[in-house]
Structure formats: structure tokens, C-alpha cells
Length: 134
Image (tube, rainbow, N blue to C red; front, top):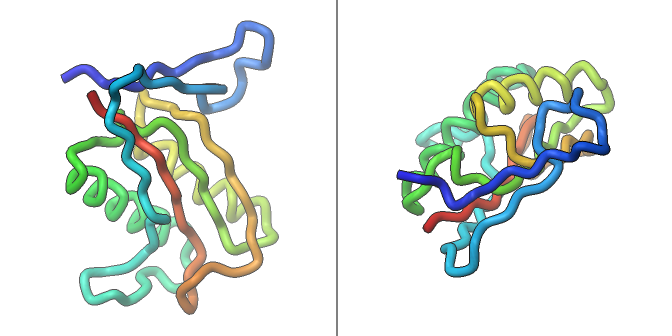
């Protein structure tokens, strides 16, 4: 199945970034707005306490489930926002690597932010996403 998403790269801006600068979806696409994916297990507990990479992996698993429930896949994601509760750039990079690797060849526009705190006790990572399907 063909994705509705078209990633746009700039010929003027640097090509060293690991994401497209913009994305579009055609008129008539069904938009999917996902809640922030959290590092929760099936019982609602935070996994990987103190481990940014473990939480990022759980976040991406949960994001894929939510997308599937909405009839979409990672390749249908138009954009993401990656939130990491840390002031350490290395923690942001760790979370980004997990998220980026999960997307594979599909590199939607994304914003990576260090934040003070997230919603659940001991939560370090959250990923928001918007997707579109035909």
C-alpha cells in the first residue's frame, strides 16, 4: 500500500540532518492525531526507570500499536515531536537514535526537545505524532 505522506527535502538547507524538512499529504487523506506515546507497559507502569533508551524503545512500540489501531504504520507519520525529560544533550541524542532507528528509511520532520518533567513518575521519554493515510 502506498503512503499518503510525501517527505520534502530542501536543496538550500543542509542535508546533514536525519529528517525531512517538511511533509505533505494529499487532500482527502485521513489525518490521525496521536496522543503522546508514553513508556507504559500493559499494566500502566513506567518501564525502564532511569533508562532513556529502554523508555524510547517502549514508546516506539506503543506508538506502533496506536498507529495500527488507527489503520496506519510508521511510514504514514507526517511529523513527530520527541520529548526527553533531561537537560543532558546526550540523553536527547540517545532517545533520538532509538526513535530514528525505529522509523528506518522513513524520516519525517521531527522536533527534539529537552523538557523539565513529563506526566508519569520516572517518565523520561514521550513521542507525539501525526499521521495521514489514504
